[in-house]
Image 1: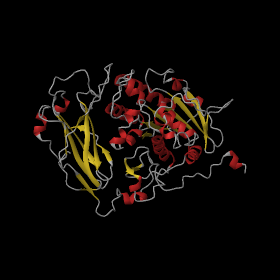
Image 2: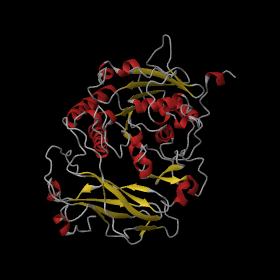
Image 3: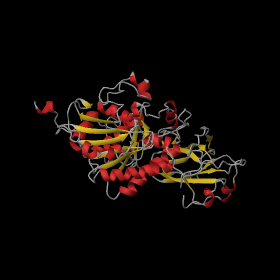
Image 4: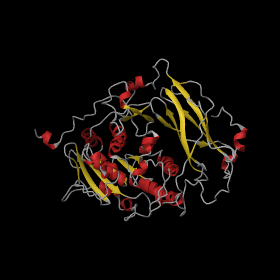
Length: 495
């Protein structure tokens, strides 16, 4: 976009003269992997604007949800817009121009599809302001606004024909897209499992392999004898999958039940006490996970097992029954051992119930406590919040969710951890939000049917595979069998 000037007349547009629209000036064929400059123009408001809602620093006045969608593949590429560097974008009552350089890495004809979700910073309810009704305006897209992507010889590393030659993924946040399983030109049994629409998430520059829960648990026993997790009900649902070795919500009949689709709170679960704020779970690849009973040392994993310490919290909010910092204050490593990895999940409760100022202060405390509690041998994995789409919260709790607000919290958390600890700790991101954001809009539109914003069980399996590949693939991405035969259970060792 730096080489394409913004037409001067865009800044003079008013709402009475034009609807918000998409502008792509380079629509000729491009090669696989090249970028296209996408702009969105939001004309100045015709009515007096509100001064109640304000964006976070560096964030836009307007919330625009925009995708470039493949006509043939259905691939949906989110367009992460930023404000053009111009003083008029800092003015509340001016026209606003946003842009993004979008790489297109699939052979297809891409068309823009999107909406203006909110004007005037109403995507960001803060300081007691109520969430604003979700009433999106369609973005105007002129006829013929199509970007054609071609691959002349299929030797490009981004070509789907080359996918099986890619190295294994070693991070939990690679960029990728959802493809119909029936249109993938090779055996899909080694890829991540499909979703409930028969689509498989396929990264662009690395390869995800499919793990059974038994194989992942063998990996935990071998490489991660102690694992700490801090999270909310989304982590609880992940652990239900993990401790049952994938059996929770795995039958065809269960897929349409309410606990598997949305809300499992209150359901009886035998393997660990879901209502407790601190639980210990011992994992093995034969029986799965269970909370130990009787007298045991919390700080050491039993032989041939991996021990998970799970601290259930509602983010860093003031709504926690037990203050979120108490585990750290009491000496979490002293009581629950030194983990190879600590997974910290935030945003879901924080964006819903905290102001940015309050959250920033609490996050500073958390980073300091993490640095004090964990040494450099412990990797910190930050799990994003769940993707939020296509609605506002009109429940009695008036959660302050919006798509852009949740994204802003996610990026702020990662930035703070990396800035404060990045030179002394390994910090990585488990990005479950972008995984859902890259789904076609019609699938994202299913999210409003779950008020808790939980992922359905089939999606949890796919979210988990991001983590499985991050933790268990070789660091250099080289191929290997992921069945860890060197790990023996007690029964196997006695044979």
